[in-house]
Image (cartoon, rainbow, N blue to C red):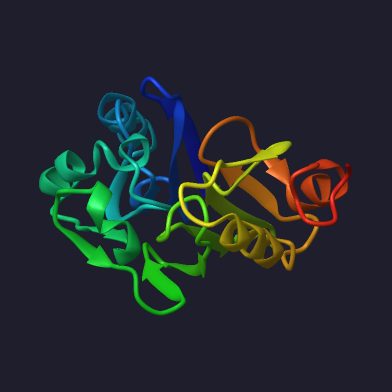
Length: 194
């Protein structure tokens, strides 16, 4: 599996490309502000064509390039309708618990708290690995501040804690981590180090 990511825009939000291999279709997660140019370079480098655009939530630093990318590739953004107030472009609501795209099964985990429509995307790689794209709900050593309910955020973090320790966490900002590392050392995670 090919996973590529980069930080873009004034808030250095992470945008990710996910594909079974180079030279084919891909899924783009969180095409945010400032991501259009580096995204075009990454698509060209790996010879990928977006067939799905997914947003972990609707804040502009995570969807700012989505409308342009959607027009260029004829692919709609998929986002939880709970975050529609932050995105003025056309989008398809995420429905159900799985998105099938680019030959991948992407599990959708509702994670309200940072925003009402925050979600994570969980994927199992063909090589047996596990990935979760957590947006601004969980970071390495921290969590996203809540724009909604603190109780919802805590509940959402408990949902993430059901994932295996070896699951690689690809957050909306900052470096990658693992669920085991966050379970053991993140002071903001329920039951984590204090």
